[in-house]
Image (cartoon, rainbow, N blue to C red; front, side, top):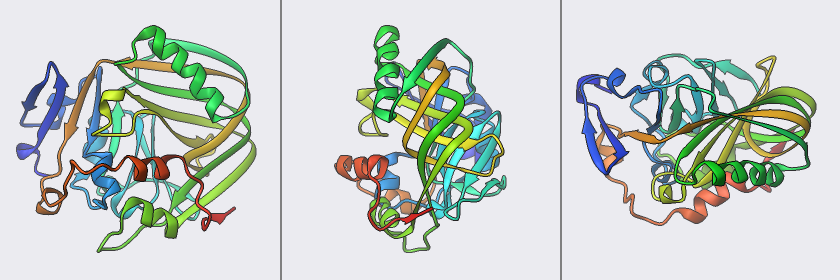
Length: 272
């Protein structure tokens, strides 16, 4: 993407903000989003922002890569790529990104947790804190602990012409179950009004301490852990600068497709 032609759409007082360099929008108190989850759901897997450019916008976050080739975990300024094979690599700076959310992480809230039996229980505890601190803000979290059980997925990449997100996952998704594994959850909370741009509520990705395992979290449990939360009150979106992106009807209701992609375990998925 040409840095001098980029445009960031900022949801701050309803203003549209354009600039001349990525650094101008790399505010520590901003969630930086590349494209829309709705465009990814419809099959926009190309991307025009590179991993190198993304690292200028934040040091913590989640996303995916060109062709839906694996899950992205951004932690401590490093962009990791969890591949469909289960291997985790450090993403090349030249790799392109069709969708992601990153921010520069600053701890605002600490939440000790015990006896979390599943993902629903974790979300309930996080939602309690969100309600106390502002449901219309964004929250990025980090949770480092040992998980007695965790289920996560990744996927092999697709080639053009790209399928929809749900279609790609049905054919390419691989699920991984691990016991007693130590690692970090990176998670994002989007407010309800973000339903046309992203998925609302929580979205979690995982990476192990040895950086060998990771992906999109489908289920988990843990006994003790401390969640670090970064409350963020600004949002900026980078729109891809290509004709293919302009061809999508982004007003189309993709809620069910996104729900399936975010939450469902795929019956045809490879289990490991």
